[in-house]
Image 1 (cartoon, rainbow, N blue to C red):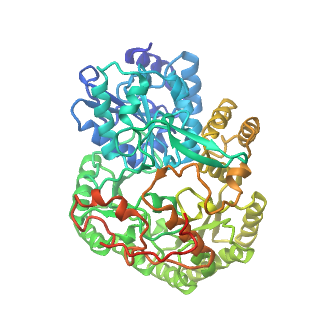
Image 2 (image 1 turned 60 degrees about the vertical axis):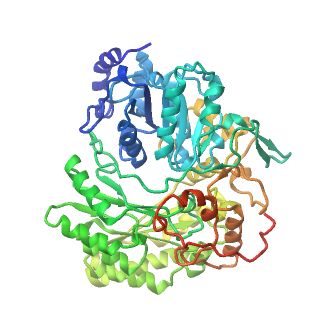
Image 3 (image 1 turned 90 degrees about the horizontal axis):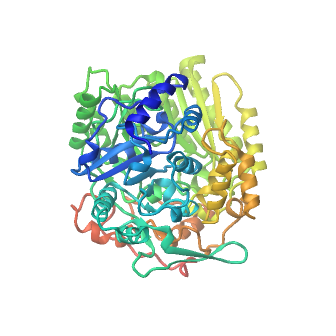
Length: 635
């Protein structure tokens, strides 16, 4: 056992020997440290990556604020140490600890792990190992912390089912408090771990993997997923917060530079555009907005409480906020002359977005970012991000004419319907945009092109399609490198091995648990970092388990296949997603569902919740029309 005092003394001996010791000392401005011994329930909020990556995470900031406002509950932060500090901890027998009080992770009642992307899976095992806890949930007993996980990578929880006690499916603001309260009630009840988890499984949005079993067909496809207890939900409907709570504003100010040194204010949650590749756009429905007054007050308080000079107004598509022009004008007037940078990071490719950024009077040297995703109208129709080519060039011309000299473009390659001419069109469009800039700014105009690779994510209309072959992805990247090599152009792309791993993990079933563990044993961790990813370890781990990438990543699914995540209900009907998938094959598009309801399933599944809130809180039509029977009616 290690006391906080022992850990503090041990740290004094190692901090000067590691890179960036500020990652491990805590004591930041606005950090909350409650009296440990007088608190009933202690929650460790864990981000399984280094301090610089985890500190700006808005989800953890929300939970930190909410939990520490509750009497009888404390929340402290834990980040994964970098490899040099990891070596020191192991050498000296120092357990992983919280920043606020330096208590070992194993001393907490609840470990709440945020998992926004799949490449963190092996890091989760590293957290357990450094904490001295068994890796598998079934090996941890009632004397150990309850391990919960949430985040966008948990909408398919099955690859981590062996290791996590319970998942919060959906939004966690209410669930995390309810879980902490139930844990507090159970502390004196002397319940077994199974009894503890059975009680927690009654909470809305909670999925306890050990209470469900999976059957497989001979070819490895999931045959059925079913509960083994009568008192657990099936399917597990995601948790939705009807009205967004007040945003946190008293952010912890980091000791060192992080990936985002700013105060994030979420202005809207959810998206109604229906881009068929976008996992977040489907799982985060329905759309809910904060009022302009609430946003302005939050910005004022965040600036006063933190001293940050940059504010990010966050959402999946900020220019879709209902009264966004009025919001921007109000903020511009309120903070005029204060040298406060206010950014809208997620804008659609339209002239309104140019007006918005011009109204904010941001430093134009920072550049202007758009995500057309595809460079031909045919591909944009397939992915449901339709816009004519002339509009793309018109917006680029407007951006350059307003004084910006750099435009950053996000494209995606690798959809199975894509042809080489669609890839070549990315280069042609990028060069045409650069030409518009050169007409106005000469050689000072630049275009940065970021090219990601399509992954067929769960709970999207494209969950039935295969990934592109690695050889094809490499050939397409080579084409773009050849075509976009002149002055004023900068091109970046994903490592194909990284894409392959993300696809494997995002589409995996429970059998991947042994693969994740074996890859970790072979030294795989920090898989989101190109220099640390060990592709050979994953290949070996799959081989030893009798599995392969192809089954998960490069296989076309029949429309009636049972997916490993089918027992997780995001409140969007599978039949709706299938219909949208078949529409994509015909090149048919849908308009924004705030203009026309397509009966995706949100309204009836969440009807009880919606009845308790103001009529205008959700941006959905009041009545969902019927959809005529079609080829997916049997699903």
